[in-house]
Length: 373
Image 1 (cartoon, rainbow, N blue to C red):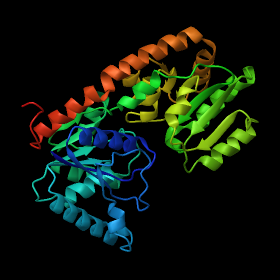
Image 2: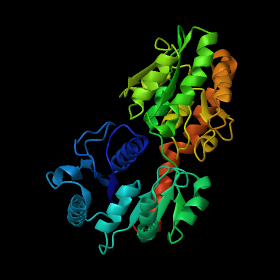
Image 3: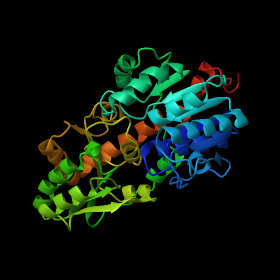
Image 4: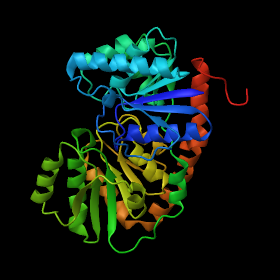
């Protein structure tokens, strides 16, 4: 089968991780796969992509065409030409801006589009303009996917004309489970890890405050927050104000995240909202004990209502501090919780569980027969 997967960029975000995982899995089983980053002009691909995957950076084709409505029309035209030339069996688009561009470019070509939401649209703060465009264009998709069952009803209210809505979770690559078997033995200073863009959505200011309470009680634990974003200056000032420059670190991005997580004591997530957070998924898959804010969609489903990780109310600094204190103090809790989490994530979100769900979607939109049919 010929598959086109379209995504805004191939940077270090969660949707990009999912894109790389899927295209690698499909090409490995013999599908012909084209990956199209539509808006990134630099050509960077953060996550490893199989050399058999054809990668076409649409922004490179549109060089010199400018931005705004005129530039957008040029990209739609270029994408349409790319689709007509490649004649894929199915188009898969990640995130609203890419999905709307794809639906415009594919109009009249009779190629099914699977539009994928990677956040919780009821709380992600998208503007009225983008909500309106989703309401208008998403009904043209063969299927719209969301990440968890808890999103379905709110999404249906936002896009009442959607023909079909399917719940398809993010997959985890096989390598993360193999890496989990080799988790480093703990020793020396303990590290609490967090990962994400340094933006208001992630509420790292709350995590920093909560950790500072624990850090004043014991001197053998540090906090490392991996990622970049617009809030870096504010967070650095907060760390300075708390006197935590030697205990709380913002080291930027890393292409060896699993290695960093494997050497951590625990993972913490303080987000205001999520879809299905990849960093939390990877940490659980590695057998790392986790605490997460019980934000709309994501953490509760991933931790099975808190069985595989600790959940705390969104924005509650004291509750988060208490949970961090438990994770750095209770060896037995951490070991058992990490073991359960790794087993559960492999069973529910490994490629062997998620790829068949995609095959059902392909058949549902008329893109290909089920394997073995």
